Image (cartoon, rainbow, N blue to C red):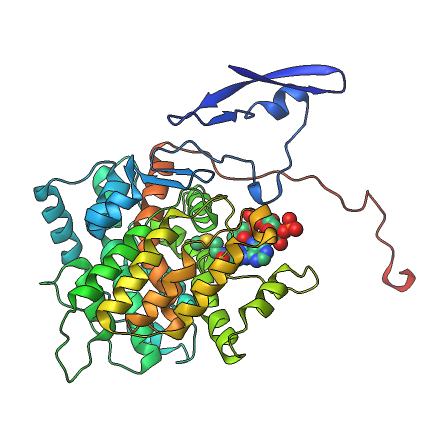
Length: 426
Ligand code: ACO
């Protein structure tokens, strides 16, 4: 199968690559060479595939999301976060023995060098936890300097296990620092998700009792966020890793990319928006009008998606879960009603219908995080915790396939050659 491009009277043919779900892509890797310099221009990479990947399948038109062939609905219903992490990274669901070994190996690395506390000390208490997490992930390299040899499965496995073990510790430290709580290393007798909760919430003078409703809700949220193919942060992880920077450096860059409100930072922005609407009297119609007004920079946060032009399947699961979790915990949150009202209005509104704007994963996730007692500025950190296995899986796949360094081209639109005038004559 080929595709033809004609330019200045010449016709060029390029092979078409077919994916396992009947997706097609024109392979233009020889475009510059055969045409004498022609490139493609695709702002925001809206039509550009950067790799072939066997990890996650996403069909935005039909609202389908699968990790390694398993539907997100089934994984969220039946899976544990750690087995989904294993699935994403290594390609198959683990056996009981494989999962036990994986968890044992993670537990053996679940401490962070005490010297890291000095770095944390340097941050003001008011620092945004995403900045702290990104910096501390990068700082982990200094304490774990062995570079990752991709020829060695063992080296790569060790780096992966270390990161899965230490990342939740530094995420919880970011929270504990902001609350003025002493740092904690958790409890290795607990499950991975339960330990995350204990590391975050244990008070120094009280036992922390795991609430199964909270643990199960967090498990589901982490699974739903675990991978999403070539999004902004994952592409960042891949492109940083493509320079052969190590795993920790690549993930630290991914955390920074996730932070922005157009990406993972949207979960915090949604709650800020809903709180703002509530404080303003709860007039959703006013905010709908603002979102549609092209002169107004306001956007309905948690709505719209680069790939989904249908319901985000994760949003459907999370909306149902929000009702269940708030009901089970006996929490009443007025912003849930505002969110439901906004969703209903948007789904019936021409502007949103025409542009195929639906609620995304972040529209309801913040409401659950809040019910679980997680502060707003930690929401994106929770997203990062969930996305960690996806970033690792994508980084590992990229390194194993020996992908070339990521280096896009550009069309230069600046000045032509000119002479540098003496400073007195400018
Ligand atoms: N509110 C109002 N209008 C919107 C919204 C929104 N949330 N999202 C998109 N639009 C409009 C745009 O103004 C544009 O209108 P136009 O065609 O009249 O110019 C049209 O819909 C297409 O939007 P783009 O910004 O071109 O779409 P893009 O794919 O570049 O952006 C994005 C996707 C960034 C997610 C966007 O929908 C958005 O800003 N949403 C709000 C932020 C958000 O929720 N981000 C989280 C995404 S999920 C995630 O990363 C985990």
